Image (cartoon, rainbow, N blue to C red; front, side, top):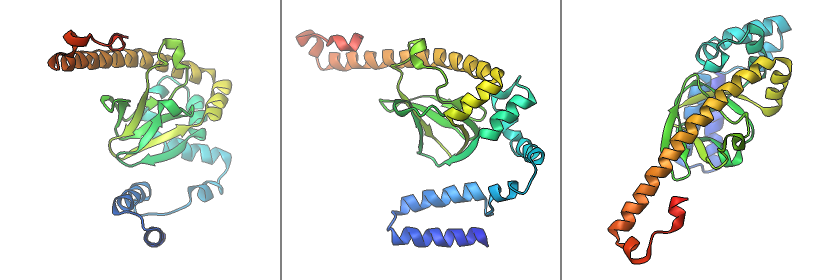
Amino acid sequence: MMFESLRVQSESYMVHKSFPQQLKKRIFKYYDYKYNNKFFSEQEVLGTLSEHLKMEVLLYSCRNLIQRVHAFKGLTRSDVGCILAQLKQEIFVPGDTILNSTEDTGCIYFILLGTCGIITLRGKEVIHIEDGDFFGNILEPKEFGAENILYSVLALEMVEVYKLEPEDLNYCARTHPRIKDKLESIEKAKYRRYINLFRAEDDEDTTGDILRELRKKKILEQGLHRSLFE
């Protein structure tokens, strides 16, 4: 009944604000996924429990996340519990931009369910990331010569992630140093992979530019602009 009441209120609000039909569909899709026809306040429920029971509930509720996220492998129960206690759930509908590297907030996102695409500024998808992966920057890209790698992370389907804010990451790293070491190790491997992928993408784009210029006979007439090789 509470869920139906939420839908009715939302429908009235969207009609009042003259929302377009496509936006209405996205909102209801979000509700259907997030609440699954049930509505309750998790914070109110957890607020009645002891700290020990809260942690037990947290570990049980996040068992799928623990099993799927590769970064949690090898960490102790205490390490994982520290991370889980700080996470915030977020749900994205297909087409949502979850992260833009030009506006990086320093948050880390762990994917529980769904597939995302890494999209270049040219709009080309270079790789998929999915259940168990994480994204966001822990280390400075310039440490790897990756400061020029600009991309966005786009939800390709319904995506459920758990977000770790920068201050919460710092807290976890300070109290459980293994967490930082593990995430940084994975981050380094990710940057090496991204550098190779984006370099291949740039080479392909440059080749395409040259072929287009050749077809137009512009290279022989006026020379190819040096920027294409830089």
